[in-house]
Length: 179
Image 1 (spheres, rainbow, N blue to C red):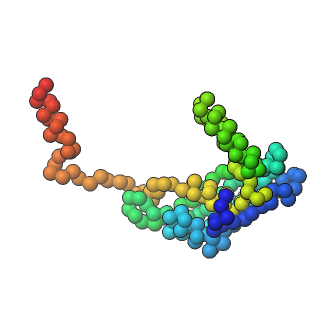
Image 2 (tube, rainbow, N blue to C red):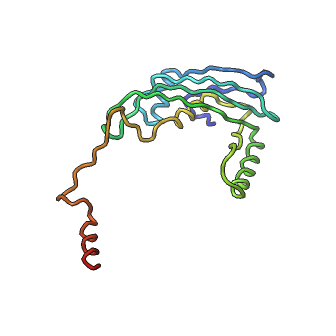
């Protein structure tokens, strides 16, 4: 997770209670505006995440939770803005940076040897911290529809020019004549 994220809520892993921690975070209006700019959205009305963080392995952590956002997207057909809800489940493991790097290298070798699937390698813990805000921002971005369509809007292809259905129609006719 980057320090440059506009929505940052760092959590020290070594300060986690033995039975874990549940934390709810919410982005401020300025943070939402900055994230909207990064994600190419006209606006983000709300962004809230609830995470349960538990210790895992040697110095690692396991985070499960939900990210909910109310965003404004632009329809790819009509170019009109419309409201959309984002609800993403989170299930991510973190490990100290050295262990995460080893797991990633080992995971690459395993992926070559067998079918891809299963569990992702852990993300690195940077400077003893996990940034819950950056994690929420990533899952918000992953939840966005890359081709948003306003409900009820349909795409009607433009009529073809000169009554031809395809620029290759003449070639198809020539091929039929030869046979």
